[in-house]
Amino acid sequence: MKTGTLNPERRIKAFTMLGEVMRNGASGTSTGHAGRFAQLIDTNYLSNPWFTPDNVRRAVSSIAGALAPEKMHRWLSAYPEIYDENEPVTVGVVMAGNIPLVGFHDLLCVLVTGNRLQARLSTKDELLIRTVVSTLTALEPGFKPFIELTAERLKGFDMVIATGSNNTSRYFEYYFRNVPSIIRRNRNSIAIIDGTETDTELELLGDDIFSYFGLGCRNVSKIYLPAGYDITGLPSRWQKYGSLLSHRKYAVNYDHNKAVAIVNREPFTDAGFVLLRESASLIAPMAVLNYEYYNDSNAVSNEVKRIGDDVQCVAGHAHLPFGTTQEPELWDYADNTDTIRFLQKKN
Image 1 (tube, rainbow, N blue to C red):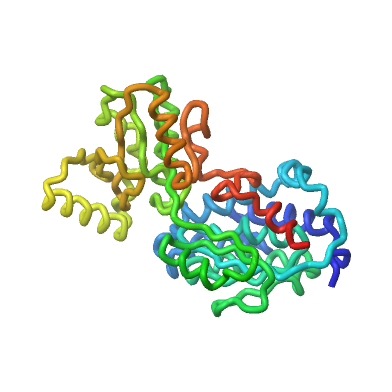
Image 2: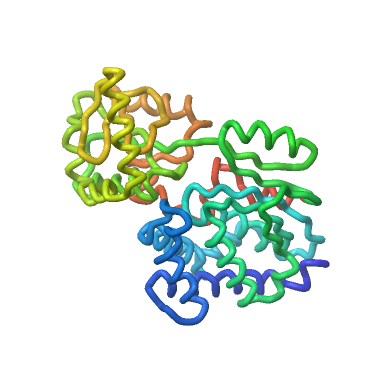
């Protein structure tokens, strides 16, 4: 089946319509297609406790905003080749489930380029992805032959996009070694404080750290501070996230990591809902934020370059604005790998 049976204009229009539905669902519309998203926002936590109403609403709203017509056209204007008629290929996508709808962008890239999607869903995010697909195919039935959702092993694919941990990535690299692939591993995000930040910017940094309980690769797990900076003043900017302790699973992680630090006699600052720990590591367990001091801006810039392959994104002046790490644009590709360009290599 050639992509001409579902031309680019129809594909793009379908996704902008989906964005409008999701926008309405996030705002509380309880009827029609939007009502399905509104219901999931309120109930998804019953199947996955990490997917709280606030977190699911945030994810649905973020995607709805990205699917606005002007953003879709700005994004796709860089790829005039998508308007050429080419034979579609089957793209296997192994989706993660760490935060709500984390696999959506891969789904979008595969389908908007006219290819067939074979997605292996994460059980953690199955309900939302299935709702997206059923809504999309209701809005544009021409997508139905192009989508297969499964919980089983992928098979019969021509290309692969797989997201997992550092451990699973080694399995992916072996299993998918004979087909073109994008294999994603663990990454972390950082923030660089230079000491000139406004109160508002420091408050927004809290969103980068604590949204989605810090479970996303775009969540800030470490901050760099100029030498002499008073770290103890930061938590007062993030008090709205003190409510995280009311979530049982988050509270368990907080208590556990605090107990481990005490037993191991590791120094930390207890902010009441997060532990601040001086560490060179990018990786911080839940409810822990790492920090490191630097003496000059060149030193921290060189450090960021050195660890670049382990960093998903950077917040700070001259980088992403504070508060936006979990609000990626369509052209903000995971691991800085252009998914559309990858898919265009099929021929």
